[in-house]
Picture 1 (cartoon, rainbow, N blue to C red):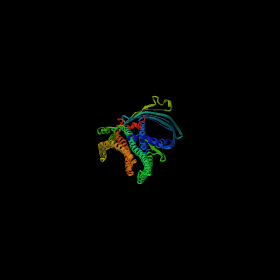
Picture 2: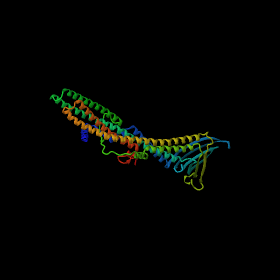
Picture 3: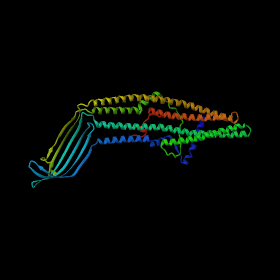
Picture 4: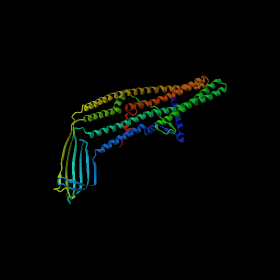
Length: 499
């Protein structure tokens, strides 16, 4: 009988929603509310921007490892000067007109942190010198082509480390975005079900008012026929007015709840909304604490994030150890230079010259007053602190999961209790309605049974909602969907990875 009443309430709820398509009212489901929140939440927007920023940084770094092409051009340069030649004890005038340009290709070597460059420089120079009435001129083309290598030594591979740091930052941003999305899912789900419960309270309150209205009409007929004392009519009026007052107060509360929910989602506060939800629990999901802990330790993001923190700390230690330590650079190049007054002849055998170069430079710190040692010790302490954080994070997760499992088990027990209470309250109410009609109980007693019925219905709805929210809390705590029997992958669910 009670389930029949629930079905009747569901049908009535659907009938109440039909006019919304005509009036323009928006019917929100939980899925729709989550979509709106994901688009409008400032926290999610910031997390998404952070994820995009780290992605662009990584793309830029990957592009930075490719060959770079560059060119420089000095189309014209001119100078004229008057100088004194001490050797010949004479003044002379010289002027120069030139032009040059260069083109280079530079390729970073990620495996060694070196750089290979190919450079070509072409120049033209025309000079004139006037001395003691005589003028000499010289015009020359010159070209230099060289292949060079610059290789750091006694140093960590900064190129690979920078790339790794950006990869970890990108991965961490994804996990942070996914965590924020799941937090939004939790908060919006709780707010949605609270609003839905307020809507059902309004419906139950309206139903209570209609019951009192019918009882009032019945007592009025009985009083007019002399079958019941007049004070019963007074009590019936009090019950009806009280139910009406409760209904109107519940309506005001529901409107306030709707406004708060619209603000939470970032919706237009003038938009009229209602809520549609399926909170029936067909099958209770069985959850063991042992499985919940196992899944949490396997799938929670916090462990991977702490691993990232530890890896970053290790790289920082490497960088710290490299400071004020012997380091150096090997530079080598092999080039060929040619010059001639005719451009076509600059690389003729008599005009070209090989120009190899090799150099080794070393930076050797001598004494730093213990700066490097102190910084290394500080970084090692930071790593130890990170390891402690990992151990404490594990304890925190275990406690969170245990609490979530206990809360979930309690809601499962409360559903059965609330369902039996609601069913018994309905049976009791139906029984006493007949006794009220025959005059066996007073209107005051009847009002108590009506209040009991309304309270039990709300308690049952609350128990079902608690089950839904605690099951979600358990999913978030373990990163495992016990309903579907599979791990939760928010990176896939929220489409964080682009094709």
